[in-house]
Each structure stands twice: as C-alpha cells, then as structure tokens.
Image 1: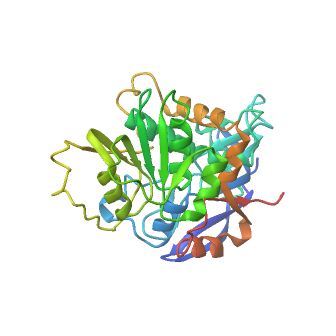
Image 2: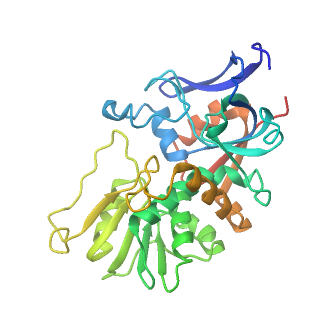
Image 3: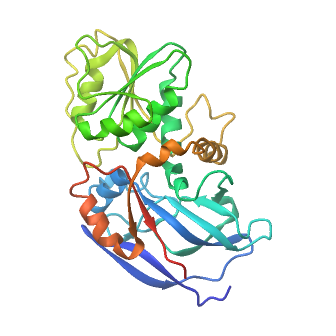
Length: 328
C-alpha cells in the first residue's frame, strides 16, 4: 500500500453538524491490516448524544472510542461498529470478513489485534449487531440471572431486546420486556419475547435490566424490583440529570443499582475472559437469522451526515441503522 491511499471519513465538525471528509491514509505498518468497509452501524443512543455535544467533560476520557480522532465535543471522528474485508496484511487474513470497533470510514488501517473474524455462517450485514451483542452479554453477566428467575427488561431498543433474547435461553427464566413504545411489540414477538407497555401492579422481579436510555425507565425499573434484587443499568445519560425516588422502597427492599459498561469485563468473568473472547462469542451468537429484525433501516455512507442528524432528534421507531459503502 502506498501512502497516497485516500479514505472518506465521517466527522462531527461542530455540535449537530457532520461532514464526510477526504484524508490520506498513512503507510500500513508491519503488523497492520488494510480493511475496506462493507457496513458500519449507528449506535443510536451514544452517537446521538455525541452528535448533540451531550458528553459531560468529566467523561471525555472514559467515553473515547477505541479509534476516535479529535476531542469532545468537536471536531471528532466517532463510532465503533464496522464490518469490512481485509484487503492487505498477512496472507491468512486477506479476504476475510472482519469486525472492528472503528468509526464510519470507507477504508482504514488497524493493528491485526484490533479485528475479529466474522464466522462464515454469519452474514456481514448482520455482523453490525456485534457491538450491541457485546453490551448485552456484559449486562447479562452483571445481572447474573439464574435458573427460574423472573427477569424484567425495561426498554425495547437493540440492547434491551438482545438482553431479553439471551436471558430467555436460561432454563426456567421468565422474561418480560416493557416499553411505552408499543410499535416495538411486533419485533419482540418475532424474537419470541413477552412484551408489555405497562407491568402488572405488584411485579417483583429477581433481576431488572434498564436499557431505555430515559430517566423515567430507571424509575420503572426500581418500582418492579423485588426484595434484595439487582437493577442493572446499561443506559448512558450523557449530561442529562437523573432524578430517582430513593425515598420509596429502595432502602426497605435493599435494592442494588449496578452500572454495566461494555468497556470493562465484569469482575467474575475478568480472570478468564478478555475482549477478544467476548467479541468472538458475540459474533457466534449472531448466527440466528431472527436477529435481522433488529436492523430497521439502511442508508448509504454519503447520506450519513443527514441520517445521523435526523436520528439524533427523532428516532422512536429506529433500532439498528446500517450504513452501506459502495465498492471503491
């Protein structure tokens, strides 16, 4: 590869404004691969907050994406859902479809260690769900649901639905997904999940996972948690303030609110698991074609500035939005 290869990159140039820019790639290093992007995905919740400049200064460092360029709030190249094909590198990798935590860009170089091969029986189109699946796996690890538990998932976004889909596979577990947006009911049913817009009075769940991204959802999660149970919060609120009614049953029920963060491996798994092993597990779990229902939209890379601007304002019916890249 010469040092004159030109890439197209999506940058948030200022708060609420994105552009596709052209930039030359540096020469590929000895231990790097050149990847041509097939698809990227918009992580709607996080990327909308980044696009609107809602990352609090205290979180500038912890919220950095692995291959982020620029600094919050802008200009910044941000994103972490990328599926591509290796065009140059070790012979054993050339031609392989891979997943990488890379921003929206049509061609890029990364260390070999930064990519995970997509299993041959997982379509590249579906592999954009890998980052969501890793978040869901981590949430399940943090919640520790056991055989026969009653699990409530608040929020029927991609992460919430994947958490419920994973928990449903534990023998005897009863999973209920709750969301005020009743349009999510059809997708939940396709995943064979019980969906409600309001939980019955007196619900006492063993494990609650909050994934709505809204403060009101966390209030709901607290209200349905049973005695001594755990509420796992996978939502990120950015600079938004969250008010909770902790004067109600929070203390008398001895509830635990546990944050779940995909950038870390939970303590119980940490001695045996690493990011590579979790990434491969996530991709392997994407073999089920029913998960295609979680991808509700698709746009071309050239349209990404307008698409993200629209999704950051109103996206009630959007789950995963996939970005396609034309052949170079």
